[in-house]
Amino acid sequence: PDVAMKIHKSKLPDQAWIFQWFMSFFLYSFPIQFVKPFFDYIICRKQFAIVALSLGIVSVLEAIYAKCKAQINLLSINI
Image (cartoon, one colour):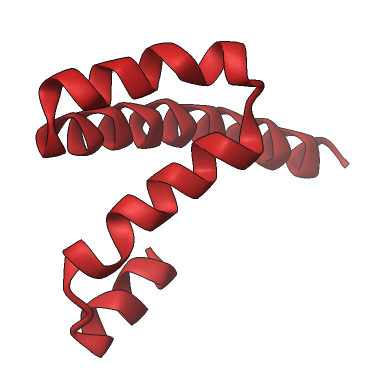
């Protein structure tokens, strides 16, 4: 949310950062064997594939974050 607010306040157009972020995320975070099918999907589906994949990734990460946060809260209550 903080990064989203900064991007929104700066009025940076989405076209200026989304593709670069997405490509960097995949190139530097995963092995090439994992990344290849995603690039195939992006090439076949054009620009909307990036949005669909990004939303899916964010949804999964959000669920993981919420689970971790709940576990941390549970641990802090038991102390």
